[in-house]
Length: 593
Image (cartoon, rainbow, N blue to C red; front, side, top):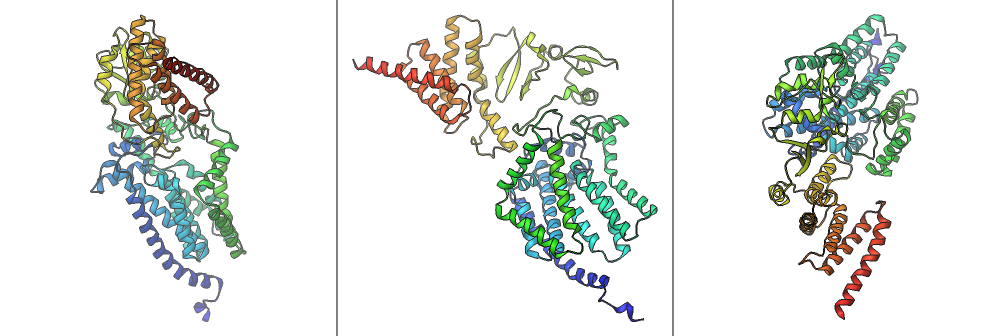
């Protein structure tokens, strides 16, 4: 009868150990959360960050649908944050929410490592190294889905450890149900977490089967809990049916439209992007290793390997958790490298929205002042078998001729029909589509666009791999668009020689002004300015000093060759430099005679 008081058996011993661990883990987790949340909050961007942040913020603010697979959970929670947080802009509130998600992920990682190792220091080190590595920090303070995904990965790992420590069948059943619900809920955010879910679910079912606690009834209950976690996806057809958001993606009011969005068919269900070609699997794996080497010191990497070995030795009788988590990491890395069909040398990929069948029916009502001459954009006009009427870009421009039309980040190369009657004139970082019958007046256009540029960031201040760096490069190159356009017009247009000379002069003066005012700027500016100086030299315009023009040409060609090592024209530039130096020396000799 004294068996009820025995604390020395396996179950009693485990329960005795878990008690103080729980309280210690809870206090440490709260402290880690507070510390990481404080740092993330202090470093939040005040407005819209790069990447998909602008779209996700807008979708949450207007309760629209984000790009596939829709991210309904993030959208709804972000909308709640926009309503409840009483300070900052809409963008700042969503950034803050993501920072808090990142802090929760850090505390869950601490909890997992602490429960596995029994070391507060180990848990704090793991949480700190992860949270403050450059990429994690960068994307945890931006309005993106990544920090919520990190939170779910940390939650599933913590629940798995908790399941392993459970002393009774009742406790294991409870944790399994919570875990099943969280697995379903996590898939309402970023789909890549399915790789972790597919590792954890078989492991949990195997453990239940081993304990003789898995029956058909319990399996059905776990399936129901998992399905309940997927309920946020009901939001997609509701939002699409109401169609109140000015920004939304896709039409989920039909089963086919819903499945197309859910399964990311417009990108490729098992691919990262719509692009069909990308870097090889080995190249992406190598980039992952290189990234770890730059993000984490060799000491940290060595420590991680040693920690895994120590944990496996500490739990010799049951090292399965260590191998489970290691297997999850390897599976994710390999699958990502296999299916990430991106050219990792290119930072940004663009698309055109009007090519999707759903775009005009869904969005035309939010653009009442714009006329659409059909149901879908297509370079080849006609009627599709479905009855949809297609229209090309030229037809679209003609029917909206009374409106000013601008193009930003390029124009779709697949539809050149606009070239029949339109030209692109530079307008800051964008271009204006102008009917061809309008004659270009360089003086008027320079005056009109001179003050349109207001970018204030220093050139090269952002990390080269960031979205901000891409935007910074685009904006700095936009400074040079007007002189480049005028220079190119002088080079290619069939115009009288006096008009050509005027265009060269305008381009030269603009290049000179822009280059002289900037201490740091894109390297191609040296080349462009040097060529402009050389053209002015050949014009022999009155008032232009040949010695100054030659000196400037040589100087900026030389600066360009020092910085642009991969330009295939470098051999030609070196030949030109040799000739220009001789010409400059000859000119100076003539002056001294």
